[in-house]
Image (cartoon, rainbow, N blue to C red; front, side, top):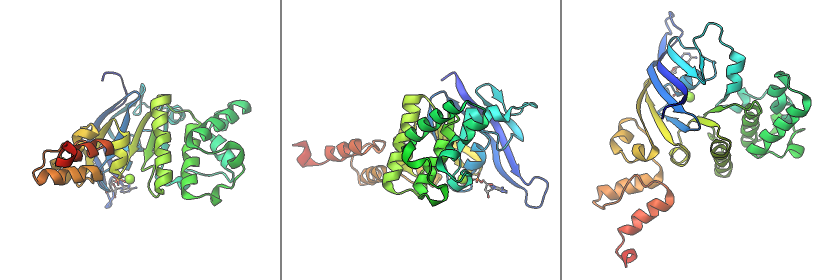
Length: 289
Ligand SMILES: Nc1ncnc2c1ncn2[C@@H]1O[C@H](COP(=O)(O)OP(=O)(O)O)[C@@H](O)[C@H]1O
Ligand SMILES: [Mg+2]
């Protein structure tokens, strides 16, 4: 832990400053993300998650405090926002906010085209990005974006960001509203991007199974602050944190905590399904043989 790609120090944010509607959303948030990490940000609605991550690609600029990403200080007077947007791809919660072109292929190729890349490379990048999210290039490139399903729109929005080849991707509730199959598929793609392509991933999620499965580390937010950080195992093994900040639990963890309360010596941090099964088997006399 020594070469962070992203550092946030004492970041504050006030919406509508100086008006009667003034509202402080961030109160001195600090965090660090190492190169190649997969980080989850969790916390109840209104805790400041979206406001925080909008600072990561310059949609919001620091009002107080510092954000430094791969050597770029977002408080610099001559901040190169274009360079920042190429470095950090932010995928919005709602894909409709991100898709502008009529045709899928045009939408995904838009970024690289604007970068002035030769057309051959633009197409290569679009193909590569579509392959990663699981969209068939020949079948999908001429499809109308408005007629896609929710899951397909999400994939197009993600591919459009990936075609810029960012070193960091930031996803705001990437699987909200997806059916279980599309959800698992998208999660596997994100995991591959992180593990195989070395892309640093930061994602906001309310789905604790997803957090448990994907994240190396978790930041818990409440009322505009980071109130806890640690490995998923640490967070889900700690009932006080889970209750104090109204964090849902993976079902496996819920079962293990309940068994523990009944006096059975199981380890509630064994959240992966096969680990949880082993914990449960360990207290069954029959299984002990
Ligand atoms: N554009 C805005 N203007 C005023 N207040 C806002 C705006 N966006 C968000 N807020 C407020 O800031 C707080 C944090 O919001 P947000 O970052 O969206 O939280 P989260 O993503 O965790 O749900 C909330 O109280 C929200 O109502
Ligand atoms: Mg949000």
